[in-house]
Amino acid sequence: MSNKDDVKEFLTSRRARVTPEQVELPGGPGRRVPGLRRTEVAMLAGMSVEYYARLERGDLSGVSDVVLASLADALLLDDAEREHLFDLARAANASPVRRRRRQPAQSVRSSMQWALDGFTAGPAFVRNGRMDVLAENQLFRGLYWDMYAQPERPVNLARFTFLHRDLAERFYPSWTTAADINVGILRTEAGRNPDDRALQDLIGELSTRSDEFRTRWGAHDVRHHANGSKHFHHPVVGDLDLVYEAMEPMGDPGLNFLVYSAEPGSPTEDSLRLLASWVATQEDEARQKERHADRTQAAHDQEPA
Image (cartoon, rainbow, N blue to C red):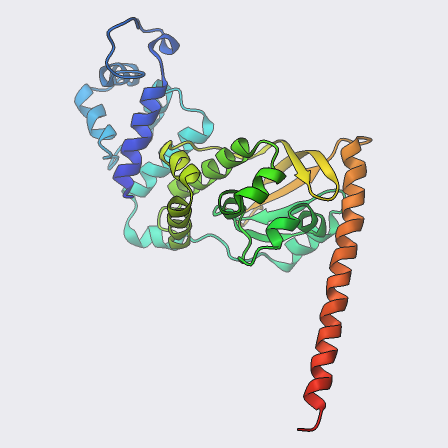
């Protein structure tokens, strides 16, 4: 989908969402469109109807930040939506050379991995905007045990949510919420980094293989994922009620460093201790089996022909 198509559908969907009553305009029966009319948005944003119609057709070339801010106010955009609108405008006005410069990270520094390994109170990981998990601590691997059991690498949270639906629905007590979050993050990244080929491939794969993803993608919802609470059902330790904080490492724009934790003294804190012991045992047994297999293969290779 082109930048103009994205702009058109985003603005159209946001306009349809705002009711006249929300912006202190008369509503009433006889309205043929959901939400606001173009004339009403233009009036609220302080621009001509013709100019707004041009914007809604997807043409953001040369639009100033002041105009974008006025439009965001008129459409009652939240912080994530406002930033997305500015990202769409930057993409519309950037040269092809500038757009090609920015690519999401594929790996993390050793020091970042050490920081993850040093955090033992809860699951922690680093992801990019495509929802690829680039690094994690042992507790995160234990939490997402079923995801790591799948063959795809790097592991991808959106692919797990939509393409391994049976596992994901058991893991996320509210699968619908998890699905909305994943799509909102991907849609945000698509506006911020529209020329990322790997992101385009992922969106194409998910759209082709998941009706649920395709429907949500068409809604053009975006979101910031800074902090909040999440609920999981782990196949071994049961229900987990966690809070999370997300940070963008300085010097690594586009990466997110996320840490989960439990309320001190809560049942979830006890469950995390059990999970830490369980995953350590599982991974130790896997390493022992791997070493045994290597020794067996080495002995076989040394046998005379």
